[in-house]
Image (cartoon, rainbow, N blue to C red; front, top):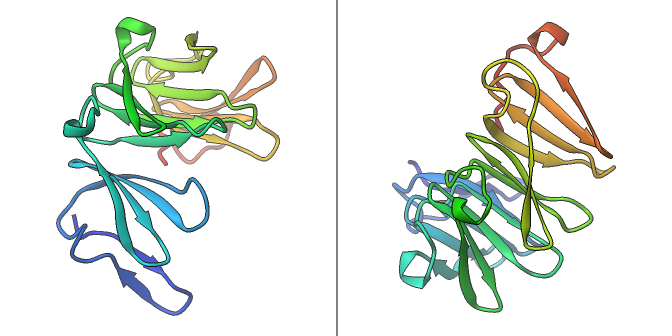
Amino acid sequence: NKGLAWFDKTSFVSFDPVFKGKKILSLYVPYPGSMWVGTVSGAYLINTSSLKVEKLLSIKDGLCDSTITAIASTPDNKIFFGTPNGISILESGSVSTILAAEGLPDNAITALTADKKGKLWVGTPQGLSKYENNKFIQYVLSGPFGANRIVSLFVDRENNLWAGTLNGLYKHSGDLFSSWSAENGLSGAFVFP
């Protein structure tokens, strides 16, 4: 709740007063010079050169919730905002929403990332999904309790998806999942961002 600062190669520079006292939940850099900041009061688009807020999106603009838990974009210029109540999509200035009724395993979004093929991966407390051709494909991660509770997602240079869960780390490569846990050398079962 202390706000947002960035390192300018010599010291930390604060985005005061815009983010002072705001709880920041997610950050996303869609391209150099811009950064989306997800807070409990909406999504802010920041120009990182001028340190100015260029846009604020909230429920008033059509977001399904003002608490932004995750942010990602796809090559077709869609920005996806994960919230506790579904996914909102910003496309060409308009906002639309995807909910569990449309195939999400849960409305509570915990993580988002896009792979190099433009597929959106969605993490929720109820599992992992891939959004492809306007539909969701569900993936069940095998393992003990907590394996399907996704807390973080990352796509590496080889386009492998890594999913952090409450019960270890999973890697999706091609069509296969492999897993690591405390039994395989992780320092603990929980894998957080």
